[in-house]
Image (cartoon, rainbow, N blue to C red; front, side, top):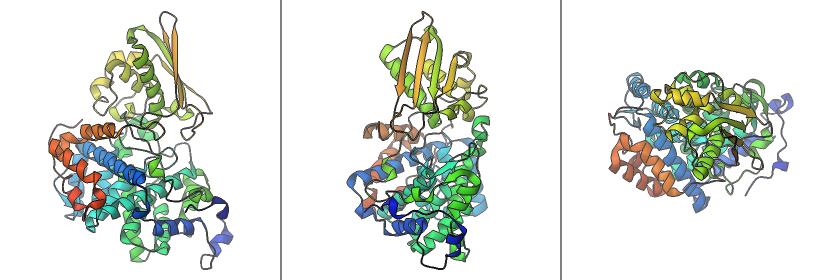
Length: 478
């Protein structure tokens, strides 16, 4: 049964804080009761399928990212630093404690910009919940259904807290709410009470990393550590609760309402909450290996090219009208692979000249191509303040292509390719997983992992899955 938002009008105040020992109920009480009562068995078959798809997509991103040289080095570092444990370093041969595996695996999973996301809130919940839940479930030898349950409820909480937050302009979504997502999944797997879960959420909020967008535009790969750090902190929050540490009465309102965001509205967190309309069913899957804010324009360009089959040589210029944030993604020409994934003109030019925007398309070779750079310089970005990534009733982008003969074509994007409002087939999701994973675990490994994920809720132990994820292939990284 969904909670009714009108029943929970709560604003953080000194008066409320002073009643922490009394009977006053607030949004965190209702949120933690929801977490405690959440059961995988109560979910519809469609919802269960959605959870498995997010798990598959996130594992694919982690397997692919594990091949990057810095992530190989990170896996070696955490093995050396934390020592042996029970949890799989995805794409590698050793096992480490859960906190170390989460740090390494989540970092790998975000490195190629292929992890799923949720425009209702929370940025990229999957990569902030699945790695930690997988490691804790493996360490505790939990069954597959318990793991899926923890993923779904952690995803719900992070998306709802993110959706209730209006972050400051330069605050990046990665890591910001992710600490709470991993903390909730950990608490759920450990079977903690609502009271303990509340303290864990409050501890996690106060341990949230303060991450900015600046490394994305510079291409500083410290940005890839954001989900790893937040996942590690989320598990640590649960462990610190066990040590006896206490959090604020309302950590999210303190951290998001006064430090990291311009606004945090607690009642929005629990508005309409229930198992009948979970956020994990309202996500998007990426089919371009770059920031979401590139996707509306890329999809519009693809639709026009697919329809008209024009030649690049005939293009005079391209005008993109999209969400205001994209203005920041059209500054100086990118200098490295990561920054190229946060540059709208480059992404469009890359697609038009190479026909590719997958993980193998964004390389130092394509970045140095003069024909791509020259075309990117003729792509101009404009903002429409009515365009918002969370809106369902207004386009996300309008793209106009002007040709040298004076003709013009244009196209809107309302929902990106892969959004729950513009969904992809199961085959396309499997094909994406295969393309990301095969170099790491081989053709047979891919087939076996897909089979296990499809029947994950029937597994007696999650180790049946994780045992397939540690095979390391030394194929050259991207």
